Amino acid sequence: MISTTTLKCLTAVSLLGSLASPLHAWEPGAKGLDAAISSGDFAGYLVGATNWLNQKAPAKPDEPALAALLKDPEFRTVLDRRQFIAKTGADPLSAYAKAAPANAAFLGWLLKNPTAMDLYLEAATPTGLVAREENKWPLKTDALAIWQKVQQADPESKDGMYLKMAIGMGINPPPAEGSHSKIAIDPVKRYLYFKAADKQGELVPRFKGLTAWEYSKVFNNNGPTASDEEFTWGREMLRTFRPDLAVDNKVVDIVSMVWRRASPNPYTNMQTMLQGGGKCGPRAFFGVFINQAFGIPSIGVGQPKHACVAFKASDLSIEPQPGSVWKVVYGGGWVVSTLDGLKGPDFVEGIEARMRETQFSQVEHLRWLAAALTSPEPVMAVAKNIAAQKISNKIDLNATGKAEEAEAEPGTVAASRFGQSTPAAKPQGPVKPVGSGKADAPIQAAAGVLKVDAGAFFDTAGKAAWAGVPHVLLLDSYGGGRQVYFQQQMQFQWADYRIDVPTAGIYQITMKVACINVDQVLEVVAGETKLATVDIHLSFGLWQQTKPVGLQLEKGAQTLRIQTPVSVAAENHKRGIALKDFVLKAKAN
Image 1 (cartoon, one colour):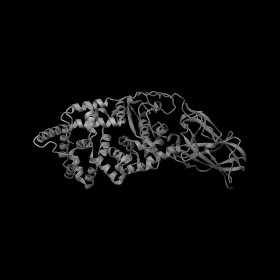
Image 2 (tube, helix red, strand yellow; image 1 turned 180 degrees about the vertical axis):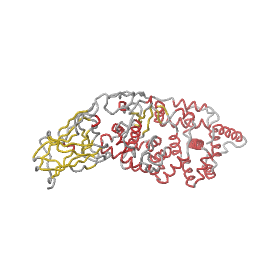
Image 3 (spheres, rainbow, N blue to C red; image 1 turned 180 degrees about the horizontal axis):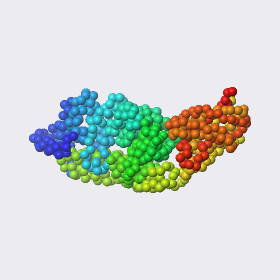
Image 4 (cartoon, rainbow, N blue to C red; image 1 turned 90 degrees about the vertical axis):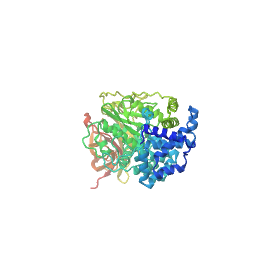
């Protein structure tokens, strides 16, 4: 990459030389560009473009004159090319072009495509104001190599959202393998994976409208990185186990289910991280991962002796920190945060600037122009004046979400140095659900088999350990129908079902259930009698069929209760069980 001092010297010499030549001897046509690409002489093209921009710049630049200049397609194209070459470096760019004919062809396409250049340069521009003003940030040919491979694999990536996705993959590619799973990750395959997932409706709808920079915060984590297979599991797990959370801004709430403790087992993938639990670091990593699995931009956040997660919400009004589209949760607010190499307040300021897309583009192009000029100060003054023309959102930088979970289990009364989340104006949480069953309409057997949908209970209750709603939750299943969720950390909870047993005898009960931790069970009770205990094996949040367990039933209409075991001790509370249905089948003699 050519230094600023060297470039100014080259420019000055070239300008002096140009006095003896006809004005505008260098022209920005395709012929000169093609010659530079084929010969690898990007240094010469950089000097010519710099001279040309100096000649075109107004002697007394003001905002209207510069705005008009940036609207000139030829001027803007040369400015983009000059910035691209200066930031990548003439020598690295020359080596990249000469390495393979496909590389040279890709550069020919890119440098003649103003839209692609604008998207790439603006996405790679640092978010922080200081770094943008210093203008010392580099571009890497590695990003071009990945981008080129994506384009070869998918011709649609030359335009629209797929172009932005390809750029995002280039500027922030994943590592070669999943951090814990060790499953190989290929940047091109990851691009195609997310493209397919979006087309299949697997991602949040707003994934289609992200910027190239935001796509880069979906494809790779700044901490442990997941494989494509883990992303697939993450979506299926949430839609199975907690479908109420598989809704855009609620996705991150599954972090509350990551048991806050030192995990008793090593992590071999994101599944085992959810199973074993972890303190702030793993919880932050899992929060970033599950957001990204649904196509939501997310970044790991560092705080004093703590880690948490930030994500882009669907709109500014979402709690916490209304006014900022990016939210930080499970720790302190923006004032104690560090992410993307920035302090939290600087990150928020930079994100607000990025959201003003037209202004951001104009300001950055003026910065690039100033960097090319022998007298940059007047243009920089105009750029700073435009940047200052903003309506700053009022954001409480101290506010946070789920601060009480930063250093303790959800629901505990242990104090956190980060305080407590600001309660919503109205009480939150589901009211006691009403099942679809009726006490006077017991569920009938068909061909001697009783199949009971979990949502068909007629009553539910329980006792919370610390706070919350003391009963099961009734949820809409992702694939249709309804399911019941036995909440974590409850002393006990139950749901009652009215059934009509055709004949007395021994029946075998099986359940369609899902859980994310080991040692989970449900009990079957009639009156004061416990009829059976059903072991629920670890399924990593996916549906499973339990092994048959025998129980004695009397003939006729009766109430059957499905419950978690009664336990006062917190260490014995169950960790959350999803129940879709259960089946009672008479045991053959």
